[in-house]
Image (cartoon, rainbow, N blue to C red; front, side, top):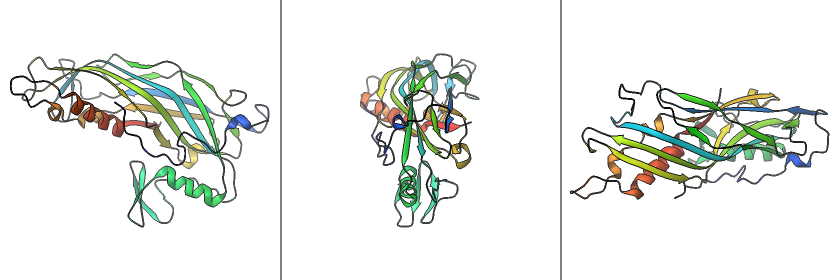
Amino acid sequence: MSLPSLRWSLTGLLFVASLTSCILPPGEGWVPIELNVQAVFESDGRIQENGRFKTSKNYEIEFGSVELLGLGFRLEALAAAQGLVVFDPQNPPEGYSLCHNGHCHSASGELVDYEDIQEELNQASGASGLALFQELLGPINFQEFGATSSQTLELGPCNDTYQVCDIGQDNQLTNVLFEPTRIVLSFKVFHPEYLPEDGLDVDQSLEFKTPVSLTLDADSGSVNTAIPLQLVLQKSIWDSIEFKNALTEEPSSTSWDESLLLALLQTALLENLKLSQI
């Protein structure tokens, strides 16, 4: 089953232009970009004496393994243009307010994605888009859950002509997107009231079709050679799940309704897998 697709008007995984068209040699008029990404599994303050992760809904989770797979990271930049404005959720342009969770409220009452607002600003300034891609080399595996754990991700070279992740000196980085493809979960859930004493196993593999997006602030996007990021499996993933709602209605046994369980996991992951700046 696939995570729901969202509309991404700025990218749509298609870009106005690619840096592969650049003809200047590396180092001549270009600035190297270094993307440093830490993958983090949050569990601070949640691990009980029995080694289980306790959620805010009083479930306990005994994790076996969590594996996240992805294509890699896309860096989006805007070529210099007269009057170019980079969208800042803390200071939205006229006609927008209350920006949070990837969208703003428009004057018409609609919810508008950050990327759509940036596209409007791009069109107003005449800016053109540039894109780089760095492949994720290997899966992200978490197998230790006694405390918050992290790992540095190994990324391949950029896909521009010289594979050096360069952008023009006057360009502005605007977005970073992680393109996950699948997450494989193996754990057991316990609850003193709703579940059997020995718990219920969860072994699920879910596909993604939606990238995880980060809009860079103006300072970070201005020819900063180092971009430190965290890709975080937040504690709120597990807090948001009411596992009892995924149980079958059969009185003779306690077991999962697989379709309901998948739907709960999908929503939790979609809303709480986060890409952030350090």
